[in-house]
Amino acid sequence: MSQSLRFVVFDDPEIHAQLLPLTYTRPVGDLRAGIDTVACKWEAFLGGKAAWKGAESYMDEAFPGLESSDSNTVSVAGHIIPDKVLVAAVMALAPDTRLVSEKGETIALRGSGETAAVTYHGEFAALRNLYDIFMLNDELICRDFRRITAGRKSAPLSDSVTVIGDPSLIFLEEDADVEGAFINTRKGPVYVGSGAQIMEGSMLRGPVALCEHATVNMGTKIYGATTIGPWCKAGGELNNVVMQSYSNKAHDGFLGNAVIGSWCNIGAGCVASNLKNDYTPIRLWNYPTARFLRTGLQFCGLIMADHSKAGINTMFNTATVLGVGVNIHGSGFPRNFVPSFSEGSTAGFSDVSMTKFFETAQRMMSRRGVELSEADKRMFMAIREAAENFK
Image 1 (cartoon, helix red, strand yellow):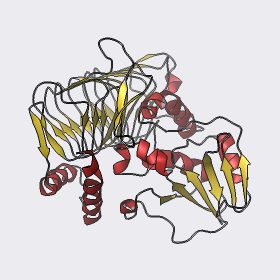
Image 2 (image 1 turned 180 degrees about the vertical axis):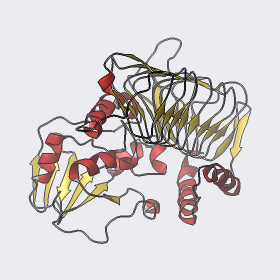
Image 3 (image 1 turned 120 degrees about the vertical axis):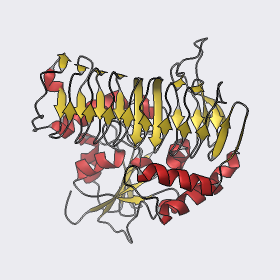
Image 4 (image 1 turned 135 degrees about the horizontal axis):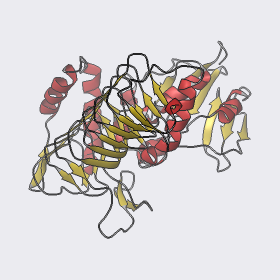
């Protein structure tokens, strides 16, 4: 990227709404799919640090934008996944020109983008629905693996590790710790980030991404395509799961075709269905329409937004959506959609007070050396107000 150019990752408001409740707490571009977030992928291709233009003003403190923009500002859509060909088309834009897909969707613009529109005729991946995050994760882990490891040499793999497939498809950052694991690369690569640990007896089938400082506990079974985000803990059995960051599913129990936000905790023995007993297509809660919509999918598990918790032995029905700050406990299956800042079980739910929510969040975050800031509190208060429509 030219030194004179700056770039912004912007939210398409309609896409942002489609990706609720995960986007209550972040712009679309801050969603992790593959090894890193969409914004990180754009930064890697464009060679600069992104500013933000979110769909909600309450995010501006956490995700600052530019004070002003001009014809040297390139704005890219946060839900669209970059690749070399697409990035070349973006960088070729003339001042005040817009790049659009064949369907008229805005991909990028330089400056105001109001002078002319250029149609991009190539294909590209994009996050338009909640389930796209896990559905595209196979392709995106493989892409990110090639980009991140190109021209680099992996740290040596311990002799205690059993490899099935091509060992060159395993990449360990220098301070990764992997001992006594079984790693299968026949279906895709396995990336182990800085400070990450895979404990003995674990079994991984690629494509799998273990991000920085993530932990895979002893005896864990991970099927691709799964991403364990930064500072997350994984245990039990996972299949096609994307964990954003700082979340724990550290114990036995099954999770499949799922997306877990940040600062979540899933208790021991928790099980989430990803397939209906009658094999019928799945309906998933949709925030813009406030109803369950057909997905055409046969497999879809738990969608859990930030700071939500599930107690020990909790059970979730297929395609359950939990909002921000939900606390589920007790026996039986809770309903398939639980609004933000709710607490309870099949016996009923009550509102979680913001005082209690902040106390719990602060305790959890302090364990990782992270502070719940006043800016965070203001953001959650705004989310609480927005989420009232779904109570």
